[in-house]
Length: 443
Picture 1 (cartoon, rainbow, N blue to C red):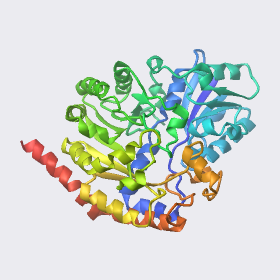
Picture 2 (cartoon, one colour):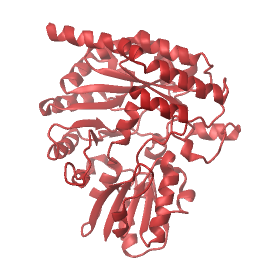
Picture 3 (cartoon, helix red, strand yellow):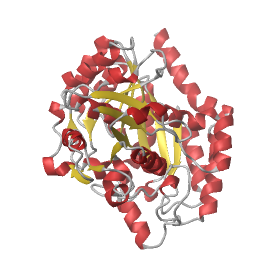
Picture 4 (cartoon, rainbow, N blue to C red):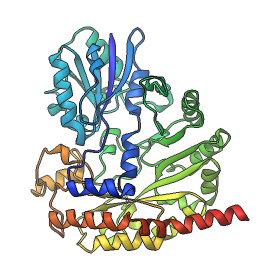
């Protein structure tokens, strides 16, 4: 069979004022554009797990939500999508099926809304796809009727057995191919924390799993065979949970002379040896979910150990420690937490300036389907437009906040965007980091 893997990508914010600000304040959408340009690692893994004897190709949806014409030459197309793009994905799936192409769908949204996805796909994958994908391919070969494949029926994916993703399908620097500025590699799956709003743990489960360090290096070397000294983005929720494992990863990265980015939590600031190794290994930035500058708003947000609230008083010290090692911090804040009042926007601006955060990412609290947060808000009639998955963009307001109106949240987001990302504020936040770098170089 000819099998296609179609990635849905791009930021689909609807707020016209935020979209306009994004055009004039590049820092506002810088991180979102980076994410949108990343290849779909999940689909590249599925391609690697495809049984022999099939032709496989990787495609990406167009910026307007359309699909490349050549995808209709496929016998089977696998589509992975987030909630914000799911309506576009369904529309593509419907067109493909109408043309006689069988469609398999999976990903975070599909895993928590399989009944909905079954209306648009022949085969629905619930959970991690690597172990069940060969069964899906065989079902398509046999022209089996529509069915669901639950990954848990085959047990959790053993990360020790993952193959090298099919990076070669990306057509890097070939005629008609796309020039990627970053490449994704996974070192772990899951997160030890269980935040009420987080959707990723719903599909991956709450068990934190690490890959063998040598396998991570193997994958990076496969990318390096296609692009000399690539910039790597580790596609993890929390890379450095296990500090000793993280140190070994860094030691093996050092000879590769790479530059890389990852997500973690503020506990890395407590391990100077790890920070030194991260810098030597080429870490340029860590993205940390701070969520709010005050602990009261964080209380109860992390459902397992209240980690966010317990560590909030260390935020400023942690940011300073990490950045003193030559690693920038991208601090992420969620606006519209239940205890947030309209004062939160000034508080976030003040905190970012006072702590000299190199980069800042602000998003609107979003109720993703399948999360405890969505279920809680739905029961209390606080979801403004149920099933409007296209509003799950992290930039659009689709719920009733606890201590402000939806319009106050929208306008506050716009106000903070204008002030946080203007040239003066950005220069003020970044100047101490550059001064520290120059000082280190002079010593």
